Length: 189
Image (cartoon, rainbow, N blue to C red):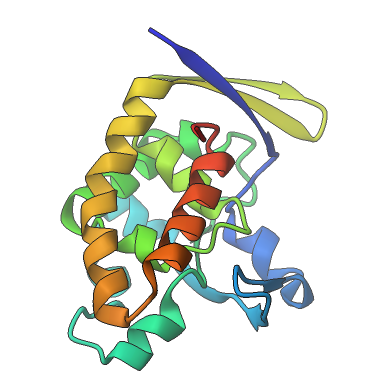
C-alpha cells in the first residue's frame, strides 16, 4: 500500500472559517479572471441527519450551458456548526458519512468545486476509508492510501467530464482544472 501525506490548515472547510473573512473568497481562476467563490453552507443538523436534499437541489443538472459554466470550479462546500469542535472535519464520523453519501448520490460536486480552497480536499479525504492525522501547530499532516484517492477521483471523473462537455468547457481547461485538484490531493503525475 502506497501512502501520501498532505499538509492542510487546521479546521479547513469549517464554514465559520470562510464566512468570517468574505473578502478572502475571491480568487484568480484557471482562466486568469478574478471571481468570487460561491459558498454552499451545510448545517450540522443536515450532516447529522444525512440530508443532502438542500445541497443537491441547488445543483440541478438541467441547467443551461451558461449556468453550468458559471458554477464550474467556483463552489466552496462549507460545514457549519463545527467551529467549537477541535477535531478536523475529515476525522468526524458524521461528516465523513455525510460526504461519502453525498458523493455516492451526487458525484458531480467535483465539477462545481473550487480547488483554490481546501474544502474540495476535505470532501475527498472524507471519502477515503483510512486516514491518519497529526497536528503540527497550525497545520495538520494527513496520511492516506493513494490507491483509495485514485479510486475516488476516477469515480467522480467520468461524470465531471460529462458536465464539462455540457457546459462547453474546452477539454484543455477541464484537464487543467482536474490536474490542479490532483496536485491539491497529492496524486499528480
